[in-house]
Length: 71
Image (cartoon, rainbow, N blue to C red; front, top):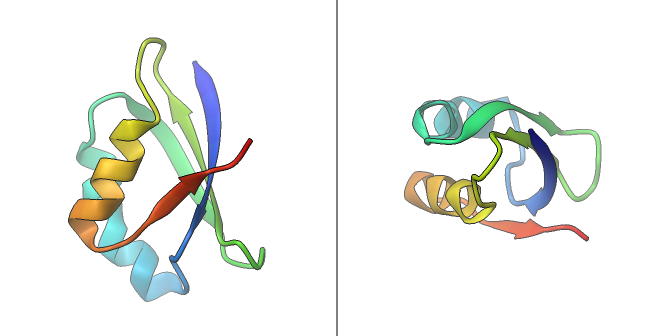
């Protein structure tokens, strides 16, 4: 399992509710959470071994949101 963090434009619980089905259905994502208290709205994702961070970006894009991987 690989833990990856992203800066997002998810702003509130309504946004979290919108992205939930997209992230839950994306292949390779085991667990995720968004820190709404962080100014960067950091999304932390546990990816299955062999899964790429692009999976997360694509799922959020489908939901109408953006993600930028943090180093």
